[in-house]
Amino acid sequence: MAAEGRHGRLPEVSATPPRLIVRQLVFPLLFAVVCACKPAGCVANALGDVVGETGDAHCDRRSVTGADKKAASFCQEIVDTIAQSDFEDDCRDKHGAATGDGTCPREKIIGGCKISKVNDDGSEVWDWYYDVTAEEADGGVFEDPARTKEDVKALCADKQRYDEGATYADPP
Image (cartoon, rainbow, N blue to C red; front, side):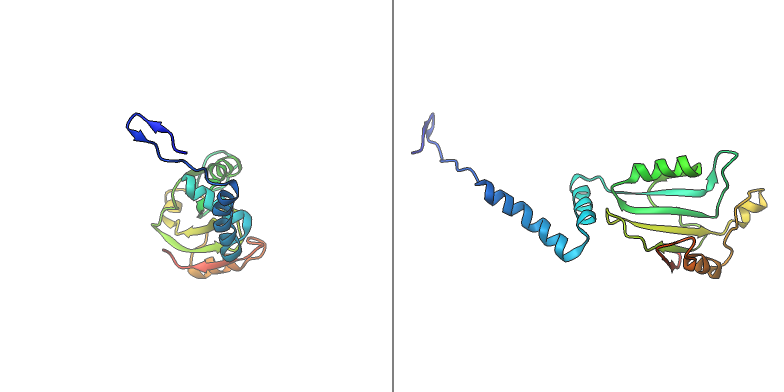
């Protein structure tokens, strides 16, 4: 029976049964997991997208600090990850390299390697190799820099460098 309010009869309020709520939440999530991706990665990526926490980050190994760190002619980027800050912290701590939000700079890219490793959050990782001849002319020293597309292709095919594989990509 509906209650009487100040302006007349109040509408009846019915609660959604808990089982219906569970079905409304679980079915779409289960459908996405079964049809599109690995469970952990799909769930992490979907939750990250829902709360707006996925992002891109890069680790530019061309610019390093620390006497014990060596510059390299590449920049690694991670795209659409929920682990953006962990990626950036790891870059600074392990390599002493410059980090930032967003993808790697696109100027002077020779080619890149899309890393085949499947990340739990569904993110993609790319290593972009650069022409560093201008930096070398200014006194920069780089550890074994790639010079040509063929050099980059050879790096992508190197199983010691990319133990789970990588495929060559032309500059974006």
